[in-house]
Length: 201
Image 1 (cartoon, one colour):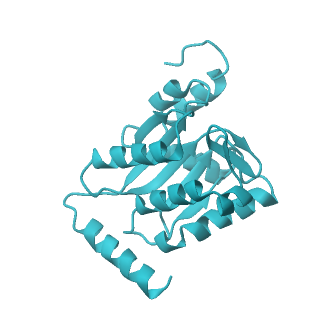
Image 2: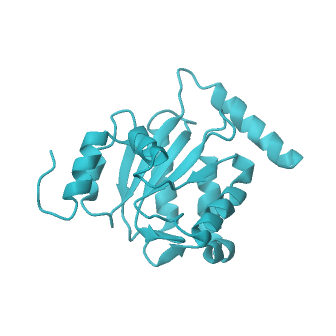
């Protein structure tokens, strides 16, 4: 970070540290294109904020949904961890319709850059380098392009010191990620029933 970025980070950190009775939040953003999205919403832990956003919306509306969730806790609240649950594949992910996130699109699309920098502004500064954005249900990091995309995102949000992660859910890191945001039993039930008409709970 340069001196200006350091000063901004420190100022934001001091403001956040001054909030009374405050802990940074965890958030789950679930795209409506995920099967049984509302049922997955019910599997989110009670101490985690969550919303199902319209896949047909734009990135500005998704960012506003994050702001509203945090402002509902207390003015100035930030997120330590955010999970984005949406469809994608190795090397790409769709946050909203007709807007694939790839390394090339991230570099050229100003609206996308504005979204990610805005989301970085909603991340907690209390634990530098520990705030994390997770991608779930996309296997985005499953090839070299996906690995590059994760690194490019970290570069875009370097001034906010945010990490990006997309672990395999069957691996230890993936299970830990699920447990961070979801009731693991309810999440497993959703996983097994998402393409059926079976009621979960």
